[in-house]
Length: 206
Image 1 (spheres, rainbow, N blue to C red):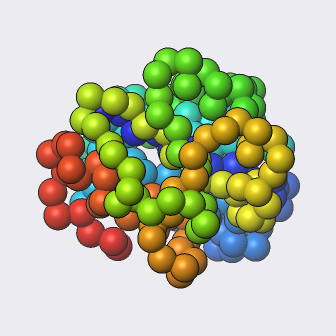
Image 2: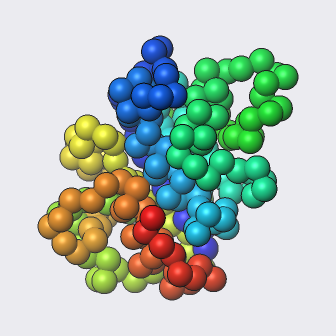
Image 3: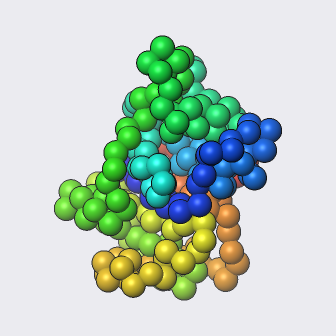
């Protein structure tokens, strides 16, 4: 089973990037970073069969696949990951890129709706994570299928957009009215769903 997470952001702005101010100087790239690490790591090790796609309106789309990276040099700290990610987005010279453990991320200009259609044509079962969706416990997940989870965006308006609703994709929720950080949603999905079909053990919400 392969699991893919989509997240979208219209706010990222790196024109005044300062590592010491990851929240204020990036337009909340720290949120994207936290989600990427939640998806790609389990107990500080790279998670197999998981992909994370970040759709950054002003900078393109970035596809993180576990098999592209090396465990020994993968940046598991949030600040290190974000700093390397910023360097990838900014497009460093080739010499510097060789020193960047994230330099193998796939960069494309595909938008989120084309990406959704592409994966659905490949047989992925897609779900939108929405507080008003059907509870996970009422959905049946199978180990021989691939799943796409659309987390949304930082502004909160994407999940309720007409264009997304028109896709006809089912909405699922964590079964509570409580709001969660996007990174926590990803971890909880992995804990509740993926763990049932893989060798993931002792996933910690850190």
